[in-house]
Amino acid sequence: MSYKAPRGTRDIFGINVLKMNLLELKAREVFKKHGFEEVKTPIFEEASLFTRSIGQATDIVEKEMYIFEDKKGRKLALRPEGTASLARAFVEHRMDISNPVGRFFYIGEMFRYERPQAGRYRQFHQIGAEFYGNSSPTADAEIIVLAKDLLAAIGIDKISVNINSLGCEKCRPFFKEVLVKYFESLHNLCQDCQRRLKTNPLRLLDCKIDSYKFTEIPKISSCLCNSCKDDFHSVQSLLKSIGCAYTVDEKLVRGLDYYTRTIFEICSDMVGSHDAIAAGGRYDNLVKEIGGPNIPAVGFALGSERVLIAAQNIGFFNNFKGPEKIFIAIADQELLNNAFAFAMKIARYGFKGNKDISVFGPVNDKNLTSQLKFADKMQASKTIVFAREEFNKGKLLIKNMKNRTQEEVSISDV
Ligand code: HAM
Image (cartoon, rainbow, N blue to C red; front, side, top):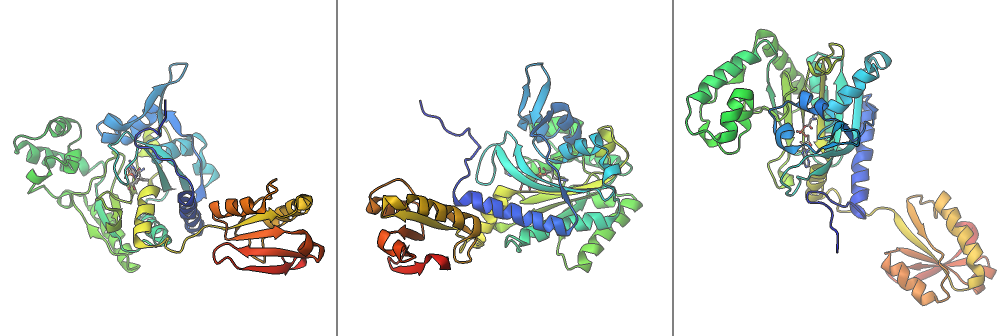
């Protein structure tokens, strides 16, 4: 019997782990500059947290959640996203009191039972940020800029930013009414659309099957209340003020129900699919709805896998190698202890000033040729050989494994 990773999951190893680490490192740097603090939440939560936050009539809740019962019969779910988890942690720990700035970020695995394809997995990684306690459009604009800066830090600067406003609890019901009237005037809607027309009419705007029928969709902009209109104008003028290009996409609704007012998606041609690489928006009612204080919030998340595909296709990783691999070999078994001490020293302090190294060896193998073969196999760029004659003169042999040259260096020089 042989095992494979479950469908839609991937083992990430070798250079791909280093690329993901680099993305996370860059993200942490950008977050630090904007004053965001890291939070780690559990990978599973009470299932009802997601059902309630993301919305019953959404793809995630209807079709994609990994739900299970623990031994005491508690209904739990692997987190499909980070916003609800962070809001739960924010409320549980009264972070509004302990952290009045309210800026948090998270990095971690998410789980959705989706149909796998390039850049779409059942277990994937998100890097996300949530900004609590600020209802000003500056917070919306900062979140969009933050997402953009993070992508730019990994070489992705040709992107399209699509934005829309979903209005608030005052004006959205009016838009929903207008939408329902419009959709009811159409015939032969797919089954999902017919069902969602009753439960969540906004979702129809996302339908992949019927979208070609929706030629004259009512515009949400004409239904927004004055306060939402002003708010959306301010977000746009803030984006313009810092030269952040965007397109208003009135069909954009997002697949999660907690949003209010500004929503956005960021796409790149370099992923090979139309799926967004990052997305987010404002959700002013979520904290209150899950039992917390009335605190507005706005945030975003990017999908690490999609971002890495785009960065790869752009050529960001063309010269990316990872640390220099150095192998320590022994031509004389009696030098094992010296070679070992040397290996530990350069692992700690670096080799000839280079600290970005990985040290391997020495191994207990009498045969130098087989040690060198091993060094080749593990793609060492250098092998440092401890040989008796040179060692007695205080020297080591350094073999360049690429061009097969070698040089003698004094032990005291490295
Ligand atoms: P989302 O649009 O569902 O939003 O996901 C955000 C990003 O996660 C997507 O743009 C995509 O890059 C990545 N992603 C989603 N599903 C998959 C998948 N199956 N495979 C690979 N990547 C995927 C949210 O999750 C919201 N929580 C974002 C947010 C934060 N809104 C406010 N704060």
